Length: 325
Image (cartoon, rainbow, N blue to C red):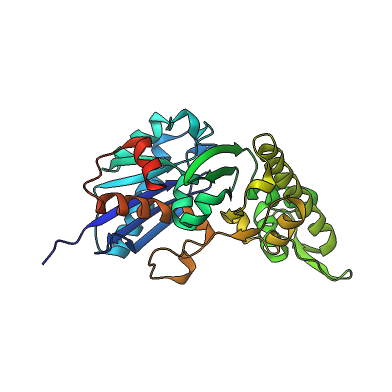
């Protein structure tokens, strides 16, 4: 009987740490067995600010994933959130981050830009070949990658994300960040009845008051419009958008905003807009097939296929590029 082979992925995000444990199936595709996540502590904008705290949350997420899977992994593929362009063929990872990962007893198998890992999970070969923009709207950053002829041709990072929407709501409505997050998820970008009122807790949560839902919606629209304007400017400086036949694929927490596809369609000059769902691998829980987990699941998909093709000795960026050919 063949020995079962397991693989690990670790996504160090700006707001969450996600660990994944998967088994490599006979076909080479991963079957996810466990997933653990916790709030990112000790890291800010991709740089480690508190190595001890970061080590603890990595250990916590990893333990949760391994306990769920009933298996331990000795090494992981790591998703990093980098600003440097892929054309430089350099993947910069904070040394303190490497130390934190090693501190929990893990070997780093390989590091990938998170946006490249996401592409592995949500883009088809056709999309990678015909020219497609992949945008991951995360908590505090938005990552952009353009794929063409099977390769990641361009990447960029914007220092704005979904958490800024929650912050805007908190400041403008004089409430807490938690309330801002709740309102963001409740309303998204959908139109509301003019007379609709929201009950909003004050800072401290001791009293509640009514505010027009339309006012909250204007705040959300304003920030989302800014994000897409920045995306459009970044792309217009590099590409003819009408030539990207694959259009735009959205992942990350921002992809879950209500009516975001329609909003992006009306603002960007692209062939089409759709949500990127990591549906190319087997997961035990339906909620894991979410844009939020695109980069996390893409890591184990990349690693499993690379392991399966054991005759392929390419590594580093040559290996990344090889996966997209």
